[in-house]
Image (cartoon, rainbow, N blue to C red; front, top):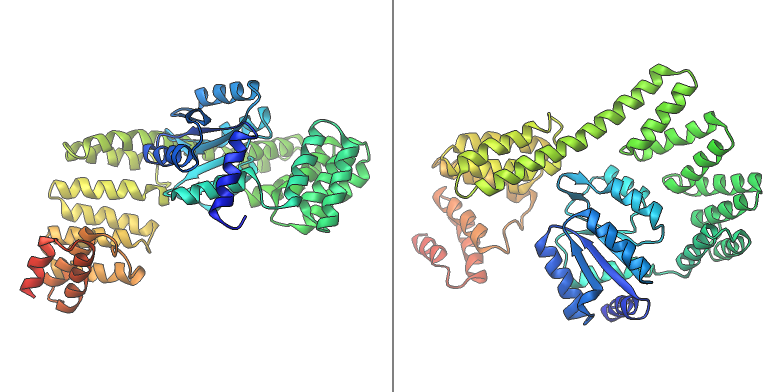
Length: 443
């Protein structure tokens, strides 16, 4: 796969020859519009090759019907819908439909969240916003991983599910001929050997796979499961705790680890895992409550900023101090609501709270600068712009409005050279920009 035409052809073949069907679960109208355009206009596929849903339950029913009709669904789903992470839904879906390719849609994701989603069986990720060509490429790689070895492993996994262990073992050996010590090939070999009742050889294959990829979760999960099936709690616990360190957001596993500790008479140790599981679950529910308040605030922001302020503060309070990068948008909205009410000093306080979470976010520094302009203090505004541009010298370079604001601040702060540089950039983007021309005439 070396060019866009190949990617297009892979996706077309998936729909037209393999009876593929796209199921999107998203409330992001802009993304759905781009995806529908890619499917229907760029790839010229029939309209019924894509169905979109705003909620998970009807999408799940539709996926079941797609399978009944003999078609192959590919799911695209938001990482979070209505404040609820899609992790649990994906894990249930994987049980019912182990082969379904799943792409998670996200704007940003922390490392632990990424690991957890991989563990739940996510095939790929799309970080929004994304171009039409980028989207087609992601879908193509999800449909057809670019390797002969990947195809053999997929076939081997299906043979294991079909209990055709001899054939699966043959395919595993072919994979290992292509790439000796391949963790995926060794795991497939272990699954086949276990199915054939050759437990010691299966264990050896799993251990070899784990040695070959110490950060790879699947071999460790196989070892934990193998020892659990053998009744060896201590060995299973060892691998479960190793998994917990690599993927610390898995609530069910923390409960499982706690349960083993309880059964071994280690109540104090069990309590640590149970309490952590409870905190993670509470955090997820806090996110839902927080998002409800945030949604209400967004409706109020334009016409009732004082009401938006109330709900945005409630949104942040609902997080009970557990704040992260996902809360930056709330702080920005709160700053806007406060500035609309003339409370520019309060807005700066909120932006500075956000900067404790993301000190290198140039947009927050820019927002502080704009708030100082509300307070008629161009010198302080310019100093905050300096910080923003040190972080990202290209900030606002493609936006006439932002570049004009920057130029205006530098003009009022007496920095003619910097002002001229930015205002000339405005006219490159928008040659008829009257505001930029007016300020330049005064320099």
